[in-house]
Length: 142
Image 1 (tube, rainbow, N blue to C red):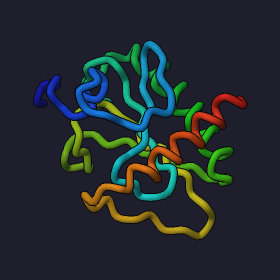
Image 2 (cartoon, rainbow, N blue to C red):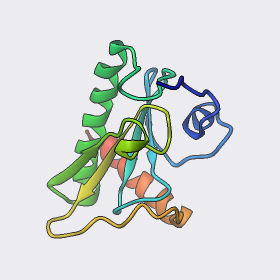
Image 3 (cartoon, one colour):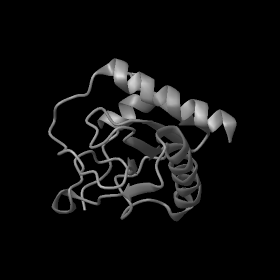
Image 4 (tube, rainbow, N blue to C red):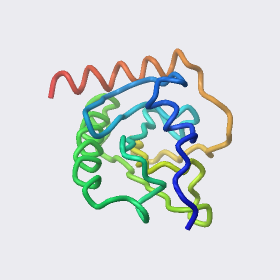
């Protein structure tokens, strides 16, 4: 398997080299808005550890990563008024991984809605900022 590349876009976000719409951060994880959302509120949770994906990650990263995924998923329910939250995680290109830094997608799913394609078209940054604010407000109430 190829090794972890510390120049990937998520590593650059963690280092502050690329801006993001932050939702939550602790010593192990960072959550932010996906810039090509498949639905309103589509967020990403990443580990701060340098891991390509689940296959090469040290098992010690999973507990804090999944704790943050759960926290963000609960906030998604509240912030976007949904019961359903889709959790997705990809490993390597054949499975659909496009950024080679361990990350989990958290996508609020209103009943009966379809996901938009992950088209490569960026969402409006003011909308992403609004959605990140909804998450932060929901987390503050938790």
